[in-house]
Image 1 (cartoon, rainbow, N blue to C red):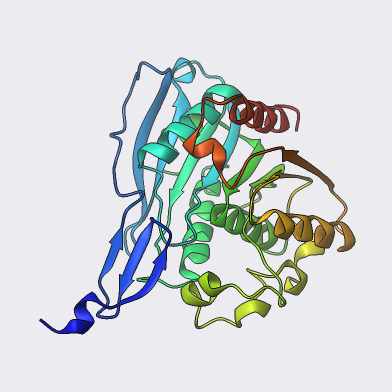
Image 2: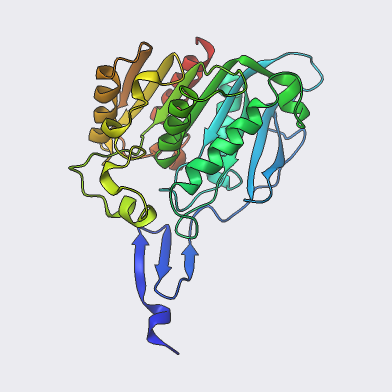
Length: 304
């Protein structure tokens, strides 16, 4: 056997391993929780294929009590984290987390499944997510193929949210929505949980690996200071959630400061969880700090 078949060229913690020959092994996010109507947790789910030509899909979540009620709820569009390399709306970690958000905030949620690096390098995940967002927005005029979105989503209250790399994507879409028509839909808020950003001074091998064809550390998707769209961010409110022991904490603060100085006219709030690390709430969802973070996100959505 060629020795190169076992030569590792990239490894990110215990989540993914990439070999020189092109083989990719993922150790997170490959499991799949089946969708379910009338689940015992009070949230029903279904899966939809949005763009088959690029394999973009989503899982839709709705409080079961809302079905056939005629009642419309705020719409949350969620982008999972995972460094643009791992994760899925269908895996237990994100299925369970979005379910808890739907229960806490009483929303309709659409959790987007985008293509991952290194098979599909950045900006594929951002472009896929924009396609998905436009697909969701196509339901705002009472049309569109998906009845749960068409019948139960309140398009006067639309929120984008994500954690880590997913927060990066959520920001990118909110920024794009500020300069490009989104089928008449106006975003209400943006929730960034432990967001992944950087600056030209922060050497980041992960970003370089997933985006070798971009402008690198000066890319506007990575570096908020390089994003000319900041001042026209397409929402009126932003919530930035940080964690005291998160290695990305300073980058979240940098995003906050960049947004504040950009001239954007909306309201930005920043909150920090003491004593916790990056995406702690995903892996210890029943701890007091995770429950407090969940309540904060629900409050942000319900008072928007």
